[in-house]
Every structure is written in structure tokens, then in C-alpha cells.
Length: 183
Image 1 (cartoon, helix red, strand yellow):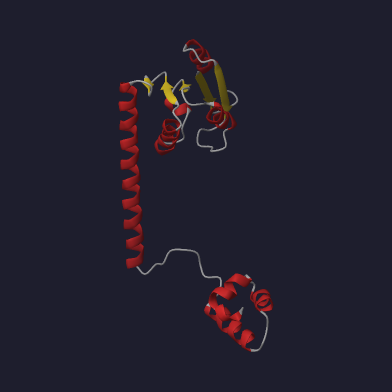
Image 2: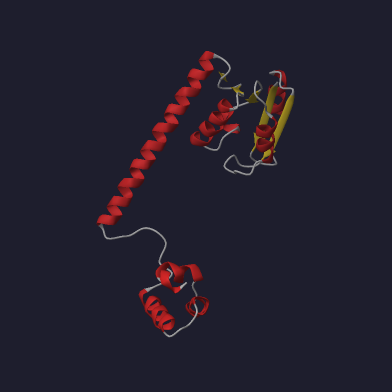
């Protein structure tokens, strides 16, 4: 079964061109969304992904109607491939049910992997540069040196972990993490 998916970004835009193209391409069922492609909560896309079965193919008018980024598209494509579902894009003439379409898909996958590798390299380089400047990443500690000393005094005086946590405005697990023998 060929299943269509159409999306427009704004309520004022018409989805008719996409629906007409998908119908002409032979789509038996068409799902649609209105909203930004960058949104991850697209009910129509979720319905398409749930509806499609092995042997089906999902068809879009244009590739950018489906995914919010290259990596999102690749993730969707990998999910479809894993489930035995084909993919067609009418405008870009991509059809993963054909050898040429699979080649195009693999080129996209390679580009996405390259993009992820570059991003990882930049992130590592940025973290290393920050460390060299004396910056530490991560969330600030909830138990400062002053609170740690106060917790120790309170625990030594016989206060319960729950009372210490409440007095210092931290969670009981935080106290247990710093004073494991308190339990």
C-alpha cells in the first residue's frame, strides 16, 4: 500500500497541491499535519508511522515535508528500512524500493553520519578549550562546601537524614550520596 503524508507549516497555507500530487501518485491513504516541521509532536506523522506495515511505502510530495533535519530524516528512514517499509519523495524522485533510490538514501545516510561526526568533534574541542580555561561543565553542586559542613555537624549531632535534607533544602539522596554511612 502506498501511504501519503502531507504537511504545511501555517494554517493559512493550502495543503491541496500536496494531496493532489499524492493522490495522483497512487496513495490509498493520506495523513497530514499543520505545523512547523521542527515540532516533534506531529500527530499525522505519528499516525503514518503507526499505520504503515512491512511491504508498504510512505510517500511525500517533497522531502522537507517529512523531517525537521537531515539527521531526523535519516532516523526516520532507518526506522522504515528496519520495518521493511519503503519511502518515496515525489519532487526529489527518491524511491527506496528501487536500487537507485537506495543509493540516494545511502548517500543521505553518509552525509548524516559525517554531520554527526563533525558535531562530535566540535563539541569535544569546545569542552577541551573550556577545561583549559578552567571552566567545568555540568550542573552546579546542590551541596556546597558550607552546606556539606553544616550537614556533617547536624548528622554528628544525631539529626535524621530527612531533617538535615529539609534544613539544607536538598534531597535526602543528596545527603546519602555525600554521607553513605548515614543510612
